Amino acid sequence: MPESRTATFSDPYQYQTFHPDGSQKIAVTARGEYRSRLTLIELHRLWMRSGWQSLPTVHHVALRDDQSPIAFPIEVGMMVGGIEVQPGELFSTGLGGDYHGRSSAQLHWGSLSLSPDDLAAFSRALAGRDLKHPAETRVIRPEPAAMSRLLRLYAAVEGLATTTPDILVHPEVAKAIEQELARAVIACLTSPASTESPQPLRAKVMQRFEQMIESHRSEPLYLTDVCEAVGVSARTLRLYCQELLGMAPHRYLWLRRVHLVRRALTLADPAKTNVTTIANDHGFAELGCFAVAYRELFGEQPSMTLRRAT
Image (cartoon, rainbow, N blue to C red; front, side, top):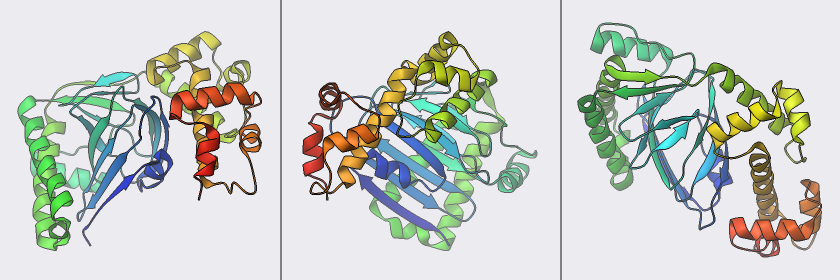
């Protein structure tokens, strides 16, 4: 049954948990008012997604193994796997794969996804040959005419989801839209002007890095321990983090933990806990330094976040 829904958020944690296509970890990297919007459209065999965030972020995305979105930035570019992806370009990740992305400004992105069987069926019918999902992240630069057509169709459907979402759940309307979107995306994938793939070793190292972070979510991690666990030197890890995340590993580790603190403060009962306890639980011992850095990032003292908790 076709479905369309849109939600808005003021908390990056809510935004990242709304995604049904896999898991996301988002860290906002600049001060300001965070706002975001996510639109999910499920037709018959094709899924369409549209997202917008008001602030720069660095994010790690791990996808489901039955769908692989073909995604693209709109209006401004982003970095994916250390490669710059500009408007007019696509990127795709292997089934069940993961990637790091980052933006230096507010980000508007879109994606379309099909199951492997449906991708093959559509490509046989529309292009006369099977297309398979790539085994790893790949940046695709289609012919401009093909990409322009895809973006026009995408914008029209996104507009319907915003203004008249009920029309998208009509089975025949959904089927017609799905056919046109599939035709447009297959055209982009079967006649690319060029493609580019991130270095596989770098991706594997960063995957192990994320696995270690996730297994020590609330603990301070030290560079020597991290490097030993992921199997690279400190110099190599710093290089990979700078290329993929735009920052040193210790800064990324700190950002991930401070966002966990903010989430904990938001959910806490001010009558039962305090900032010191929550900060210490996440490995922050120097409360004064922590409070200054927290205010620089979020624009308020951690005590203010706790007082607003509900």
